[in-house]
Image (cartoon, rainbow, N blue to C red; front, side, top):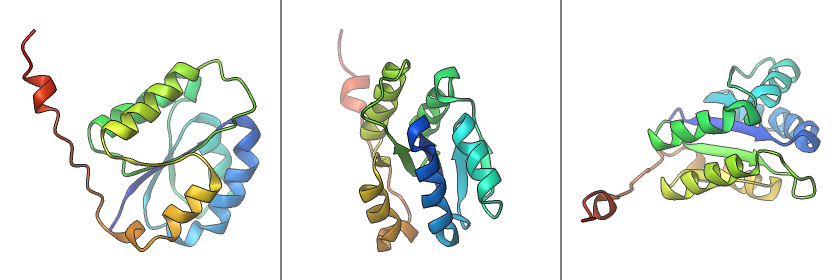
Length: 142
């Protein structure tokens, strides 16, 4: 089962996500990987066995690109390692991305404890279910 997986990390967390990707490269190499701007570039350089498709930097639209993939059912897992101690100028974009992940039933991990649970789960190799029903909202009377 090939999944579409995004790897994203705030600046102070980039060295940690690179180390995490190296640790789990045997599992990640089997999947389609995407990364926002610098995160994708740094992982690609540090772990050449991983074929990662670079998107725009988060503040330049990369978060929205991932959001669009989620809405279209084209992203199965989002590993978005957040730095809770550093203010982010594009915080509204991050909140929108996390909201879409919740709405469309996309697996999301915002810290390494959760990321490890996700990648080590037997469900990691199973098909992802993106079952959502927004008909009540779409068909509402205004």
